[in-house]
Image 1 (tube, rainbow, N blue to C red):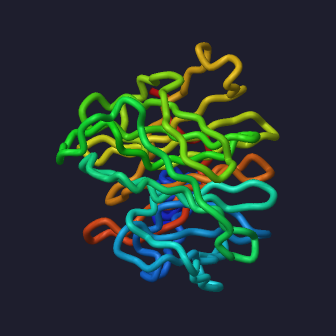
Image 2 (cartoon, one colour):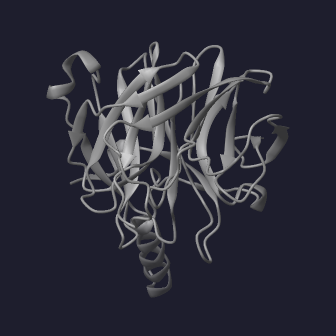
Length: 278
């Protein structure tokens, strides 16, 4: 065999050794949703929204990252939309961003599948007695999950990196929330979703060094909440701020990341088998 062919085989082998067919593909999103902060599904498409700074709108995007439609939510306000949950009849928009612990108007909007506002829920934290500015408040939340007849909230704690779990009815009304359990997740939780079919709970989060994480608890149940533990996976992402997660019917996990600095907003399908558990 000539030296020329040996060299070509060497180059081909080097290329293949660097190629990972399981490497998740990053799907760029339009700048219209550069602050994508929640994910739900509708048919074969996703529904998402921006956080504070945008109007009260939901956006339909397909799995190619293309914007399909825009739905103004008449009667709602986007003070700081942070997540999007769903069940068979409604979407639930979490206007629960509370970076400095000052808000007294935390709201969950009920929106039907025709994207019409139906009602709302007002929530407060039972143990919060001060609304002065606090850069490390424990009364912030960016993860909202539909679970049976309840909605669940996982908190974002900039001081301890733990997360408190709260539960309250889906029914419109006003609720004072008391923590059911503290999870030592060692991350700032940014999104969540639950699959009733597989009983899998998934959360996204990050640390101040910008490392991104996926946390997964199988066989999740409030009835056995004291036994629940999350597996923690490091996401191999750079220049990302993962803000949302969605578990589809086939149990595939998708995330979305906002445009952070010079980064682009994107969708990504996650293969748990390709991730390193910490």
